[in-house]
Amino acid sequence: MTFDLPSSYELMCVIRTFEETLLGSFASGLLNGTTHTCIGQEHIAAGVIGALDLERDVVFSNHRCHGHFIAYSRDVDALARELMGREGAIFGGIGGSQHIRYRNFYTNGVQGGIVANATGAALAEKRKRNGALTVAFLGDGTFGEGLVYESLNLAALWLCPILFVVENNRYAQSTPTETTTAGSLEARFAAFGIPAMRTGSQTPTDLRALASDLRARVLSGGPHALIVDTYRLGPHSKSDDTRPTQELNDAWSADPLKTVRALLPEPQAAAIESAAKRRVAEAFERAARAEPSGLEAFAN
Amino acid sequence: MTYLESIRGGLQQLLGDARDTLIVGEDLLDPYGGAFKVTRGLSTQFPDRVISTPISEAGIVGAAVGAALRGARVVVEIMFADFLGLAFDQIFNHLSKYQYMYSDVDRLQLVIRTPAGGGRGYGPTHSQSPEKYFAGMPGMRVFAPSLYHDPGAMLVEAMERYGPAIFIEAKLLYGRELITPGGVAERGWRMRKAERSTDVVLSNADVSPQLTVATYGAMASLAEEAAFALLVEEELSTDLIVVGELSGASPDAMDSAARTGRLLFVEEGTTPNGIASETAAQLLEAAAHVRLGRIGTDGPIIPSAKHLEERLIPTVDKIKRAMRALLQ
Image (cartoon, chains in turn blue, purple):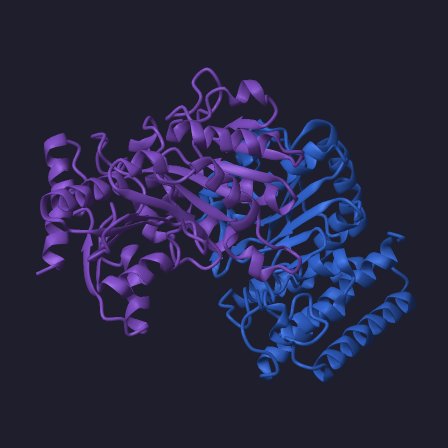
C-alpha cells in the first residue's frame, strides 16, 4: 500500500470523521456505553502504523485505540459494528470500543496492563526469530502505573524487540500532565537504558520515517521509545471536557489535520475529505441497518 | 516420589515438549533452583527455557500473558501465594478475560504455580492460603494438589486442558512422599480417583460412611489422620473427599454429603466466604438435607511464633472435635 501525504491525509480524515460521527451518535442516543476518541492524534496512528510490516508486526493499543485500529485494519465497517453490537463486528460487540483483538492487534481498557503484555509478546516473537516488531502505544497518563516501569525494565533486560510509542497529549482524563508526572518522559526510558526519540511533528510522513528508522534499530538493538508531543482535541471520553477555552482554541488552530491539509493542493484535499466523509457515513449506515449480533460469539 | 519431585517431573514434561514452553519466576536458576527448590536442575537441563526475573510479580505475569497470546506456553512461579496480590490486576483484568473478549483466543496456556499455607513460622505475609480470592473468578481455574494426587500430572493437565489456572502448592508437603492406594489400604481406606473431577475419594472398605469430610492440600493428611483415629476410637466411618479443583463445587463432596447427610469442610484459609462456601451453596440449591461444619484458620493473620500459629491453623484434634460435633 502506498504511503504518501495524500494517502495518509485520507487515513487521518477517515479517523477524524469516524471519531466525530461516534461522538455525535452518543450524543443522539444511537450508541450506549463509553468511548475514547483520538481526535487530534490521528497523525500518530497513520505515521507509526504506516511504518510496520502488517504481516508480522504486533500492536498493543489502549482505550484510545480507534485511530490505531483503523490505520492497522482499514476496516471501518467492523469497528462501527463493534461499537453498535451488530453482525460483522470485530467480535460481536463484546469487547466494544476498548477491548479489541484483530489479527495481531490487541487492546485492553486498564491503563498500563497492555505494556506488560506487549513486553511478553515481544519476547515470544523474538524467540520465533521471525523479525517481528511489537509496538506498545501508551499515553502520558499511563506513566502513573507502576507496571509500566516493571515492563520497561523487563523489556530492556530481555532485549525485547519492542517500540514504546508515547502519545503525550498533555492530559490524563481531566488532569494536566504537569500535575501527575514528575521528572521527564525521556528520563524514564533512559533510566532503563532505552533510547528515546522525541518529536512534536504533525506530519505522518515524517513520523513514518522516524518509526521506520526506529523499527530497524529495535530489531537489531532492542527496545526503543518514540515520544510524540501532541494534544487531545476531543474530550477524554464523550463530553467531559473542563479545559480552558483559550487553550482549546489555540490547540484547534494547530489541528494536525489543518497542518497536513496545508501541504496538499486545495482541490485534492477537498476531494479526499469528501471521500472520507462518505466512506465513514456509509459504514455507519450499513452498521445501523445490520442485525444485532448474536450471543454465539459469546457462548463458551 | 515426593510432592516436589512430582511437580518437577511435570515441569520437565512440559519443557520437553515441542511447544515453546517457558518457566518464569524469581530466583529460579541453578544452583539456587527456586525458593523451595522445585525448579532445581531445570535451568541446566533446559538452558533457554527458564527465566529468572526481577522482583516484579505484576510484570512477570503480564509478560507471561503477552507471550501466551503469541502462542508460548508459560509456567509462572510466584514465590509465595501471598504475593499473588501484586499480580491481581493482570489475573483479574487481563489473563482471565482475554479468552472471552478476544475472538479466536481460547484458553491461554498459562499456569501460575505458587506455594501456600502456614506451619513454617514465616508469619502473616508468607503463610496465607489466598486461594479463595481466585476461586470463583470467571475464566480462572484453581487447582490444589495434595499428597493423594499426582501433582505433576495435575500440573500438566492444568496447562494442557484447563488453563489459565492457578496451581496452589502446599509448601509443607514438598518433602513428603506421595500417598498410594496401597499405602492407605493399610489404614482401611479404599482410594480412587473420581471420574468427573480431579477429586480423590477415600472411603472405608467395609463400613458405610456416617459423615463426609471434604478438604484439600496439606489439610488432607490431617483430615485422614483424624478420620482414621475416629474409626479406631469410635467406629466412626468417614468418606474423605480430597478435592483437587477449588473453583466451583466438589461434585464428589456433594454426592457423598447427600448420602451421609453430614459434611465437614476443612480448609487452611479463613472460612468466611471460603472454599467451602460454593459446595455448601450448591447443596442448599439442591435442597439436600446436610448438616454442615466448616474449619479453617481461626484468626485474621497467621502469627510467626510457632506456638501461636499452632493455636490458629487447623489441627487433627480440631478436625476430630468438629467431626464428632456433626454427629450430635
